[in-house]
Image 1 (cartoon, rainbow, N blue to C red):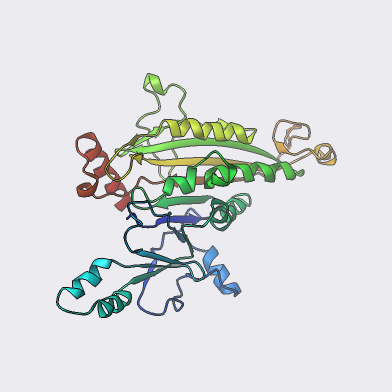
Image 2: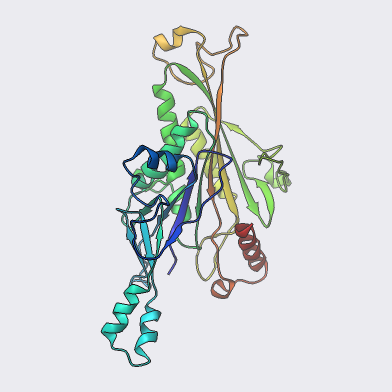
Length: 350
């Protein structure tokens, strides 16, 4: 059974990730931020000053439902308990009763504390409100933000982050971030925005531009990365409407490398990074605001129309869909897929 996918978010480019804290007994005793957010200002401040980590489990597949659940989610306190029924079976073999084995089985479960935990019935909207929306709000204030998903192949990372679906309630974090960004812009009559989109994949330790228009001619592959993570020559697409950005990310996804393995019919073979550049500046002319106009730059009341200097707030929002970690023994990949798996696992450990 695939374990829970882990979603991490941060609003600072200088913070280091903190792993979920293993707990021995008292699930509510950890000071690692594993509650529902806390009521004190110090707890809230602590959560905002570091990387936050969330866990989400997907519904069981039919082949998995025949076994006893090995993962239990307590959404109220943000904890995940993991256990294996093989532990109970090992206690029965020496002669212990089944009841005693199951009692000991409960006591051997390992518990982990997160900033939030989402069960199989949690909706995409609920995940967005808890994980995505706070990062978007921070980016609109000028902070760089990143949301990434990590977990075993087949655990539901891409569904949580990128899914479009046939119905709006199926949409993942990235489409909801795009829609919410443009809704905010439409309501802001005092500022103008420049919005751009970019996307790269890290495939076999190589950085590729997913929106390069001449990819078929061999351009956009093997790009260099400078200190700080900037990629010279990366294609940025200016977006004035949400459908423009969603279409750009759809095209980017179509260029990602996928393959079928024993563990996943559509396994990501590369890490995908989707980027949104946000630049906001105030209108220098009151005419646009007076008429209730808002949105991207280029209309009446655009800042800088008379060579004036105005303050500009810039931020970048990154959504990272990491390729799933996998055991080669279980996925049974070989050849090119074996090389991909080695590169995936190596980069996840760097």
